[in-house]
Image 1: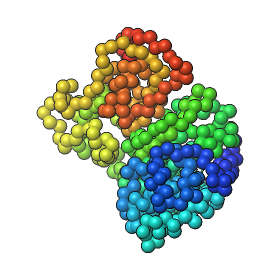
Image 2 (image 1 turned 120 degrees about the vertical axis):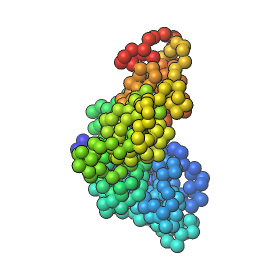
Image 3 (image 1 turned 45 degrees about the vertical axis):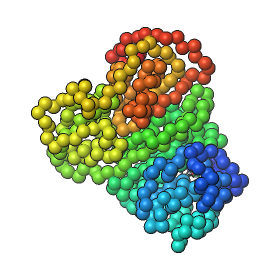
Image 4 (image 1 turned 180 degrees about the vertical axis):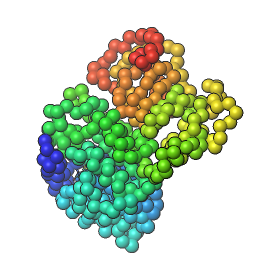
Length: 405
Ligand SMILES: C[S@@+](CC[C@H](N)C(=O)[O-])C[C@H]1O[C@@H](n2cnc3c(N)ncnc32)[C@H](O)[C@@H]1O
C-alpha cells in the first residue's frame, strides 16, 4: 500500500469509529468511572488508546502538552486536569469527525474542572507535519497513533522539533516481536486496527534513538494480540530531548566527570555506544553526564568529579547490584525476554547478552532473574508457546554467546 492509501484507510476507519461511537481498540488502564465524572460520555465511547500515557505521572502542573493523534480527546482532557488551568494542551488529529467530538466537549470539561475557560485546543493536522511551532512543548503524549503512520521516522522527527530542549515524550503504541510480514503490511483493515503498522520493537527503539531522543525506556507494557505467530504488545515508552553538545570535537571528548555502573547488568552499552562495566569508573563528557543524571538512570550509576584511589569496586561492595541465578536446572517454558530500556546492549551475570528490542529465549532460571525487581523495568517478557509445554528440566553450562542458561 502507498503512504497515501494507508492514511486514507486510517482516516476512513476513525471517521467511521467517531460517527458510530465505536471502539476499534480498547484502552486498558484508565479508571473510566473517574474520567466520567468530568469527561462527556461521547468522548469516552470513542477512546481508542492502548495505554495510559497521562496516567503515569508524565504531565506536571503548568506544562504545555501536545497529544499527537488526539482522537475524541480523552488523553487531552486528562492532561488538562493534571496540567491545571495554568497549563495548556494541544490535541492534533487528521480526522474531522474525531476533531468535532473533541472540540464540542472542551467547554463541558473546563466547566466540570472549574476552569474559567478551556485550556485545550484541538488542531487539524498530520503527525508527519505537526501544526505546532518549533521548541514550544514540554511533554508530548500519544496513544496508539504512531503505528498508524506510514512514515514513523518523520513523526518522531516532528515530535523532536516541537519539543523544548529538556522536554520529553511518553507514547503508548503497538509494537511487534518480529518485522511484520508483507501480507499483513498490505492489509488495509488491519492498519486501522493498529496491527499492520506496528513496528518490530528493535526498529521502534532504534528509530526513536536515531531521531535524537535519549534515556528511552519502557514505562508500561501489556499484551495486545497474536496473529500468525506475531506477538503484538502495547508498549509505553518515555524519552528525552536534551541539549545537543555544541562544543568542538575536543570539548566533546573531554572528561567532565566520572560515572560507574552499579548494576544489575555486568556491563552495558549506552545509546551513545559507550560501554560501562559494573564497578569500574569511567570518564565521561558533559553530554553523557547530563544523560546519566536523568531520572531513569539514577538508580544504576554513581558519579564522581575525580577518580578516587583505586578505580574499581569489588563485587561485594554494598553499592554493587548483582542478581545471580539460583543453582538449579532450567526449564524452557516458551519465555522470551526483550531489552526495552535505556541501553543498547547489556549482559547479565549468566552470560546472556541482550540487544535492544530483540527477543531472546530464556529458561525458568533466567526468567526468575529478569523478573526480579532490580531487572524487571528493563525487560518485556512474553511467552511464545501457544500450546502447553511439558518442560523437562535441563542442566546446561553457560556459553560465551549466551545460548543457554
Ligand atoms: C487509535 S485512535 C487513538 C485516539 C486517541 N489517542 C485515543 O486514545 O483515544 C488513532 C487516532 O489517530 C488519528 N491519526 C492516525 N494517524 C494519524 C496521522 N498520521 N496524523 C494525525 N492523526 C492521525 C486518527 O484520526 C485517530 O483519531
